Length: 400
Image 1 (cartoon, rainbow, N blue to C red):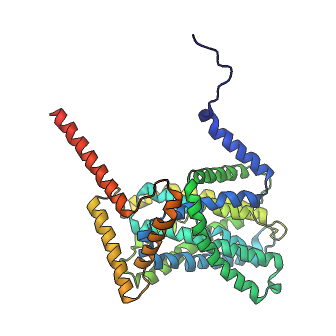
Image 2 (image 1 turned 60 degrees about the vertical axis):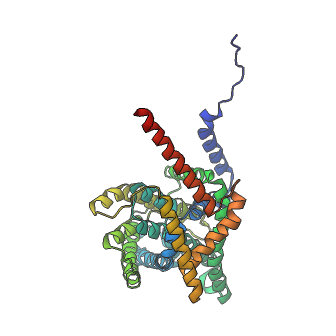
């Protein structure tokens, strides 16, 4: 006998629109500072936790050069270019406010970069340089964003030496504190996709808002400055890096690195958290930020794949490493780390080894229900491979 269902819950059919509606309702009620405080950290920090540490530490010098020196170059150069054209804007903007905007618009979104580069399967060197630079770029931009924001509130003439020292210390606090927080957020990685999606939903809704100041000249100068300054900085810094590198970064790779500077949720979040009382041009900054994000994501992001094919950029073949390759790679890492320890230097292999040990001994036991060390993972891989080979052989025998 079939009974009539008076009440039936089908959460899987309506969970997505209900979650989005709940977040939008919270957005309306909450302050923007609180909103982006809870949504922005898991986006960047979760991506940082799953960064491939072997190629990262092998190229740590080049990545740091791009992330620190390159970001400072972009901020200063974009700020100066915007200040040169300031007489043509619809409103008067102080130089400090332009530096605040140049800082937030220089924040390259690691999630947007990662999604694009994983789709086109670029070579490991290009992938790790761009992705690593976009991650470390956040520490520089966030610190300078708050520093210039404080200058705009306090006034440049009232700053003391102590304020500059605190701003310098905050860089290391954000950089290394972000790694720690990222380990915690990695335990709930499912939230990161939701955070990214919700911010872009909010970004889309903001485009139809009436609180906009569409200054065409300011938008055009910003787009041109972002492209030109990034290309110039990438070529100059790569020239300096190639003088010391064994594996040179090719010219076509440099072009893709410069072209792949996509903006996303991070710079939009920083723009929305501007203090309207301290930065009077906030509406113009937010409007320009929306245009820059749309241009980089939809124009640069969609055309980068054809450019990779056109320029014949070296791509990476996606395949699972064999057990022998994994054993040789681990042995090579241990040997190189041992050589660095014997001769008494703190090289990238020693740094990578320490991070790997910290991850295996402390992070994984807290994050994983059944943590496995490197040897256990290799044994599991061997057993899995043997099982798949036996299954394929049985299938062949049955067919025969």
